[in-house]
Length: 98
Image (cartoon, rainbow, N blue to C red):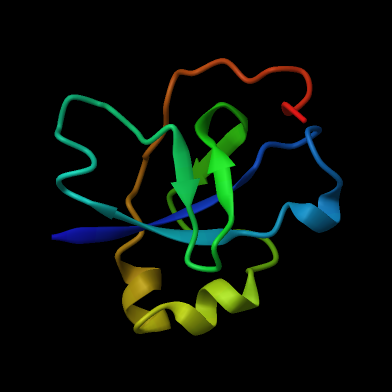
């Protein structure tokens, strides 16, 4: 089974216009129940957001990425399958790697 995750860059790392909420699909094989998350969040629109600079949300909040919405099989399904409380303990650097 797969779940849809809302992910965006953390505040202060990029300009607000780049903090769109992207959608990612996380298969149960990707998260094995051991608390492991991917190194990069592969969004539906093709962006790869490093986990160290990403924030995940229990529901979409903020400006959505329209290509992600359009590439989602069913936006209603995506909105209802967002994983509540998904978070990680990785420390974010002051600035993203260039």
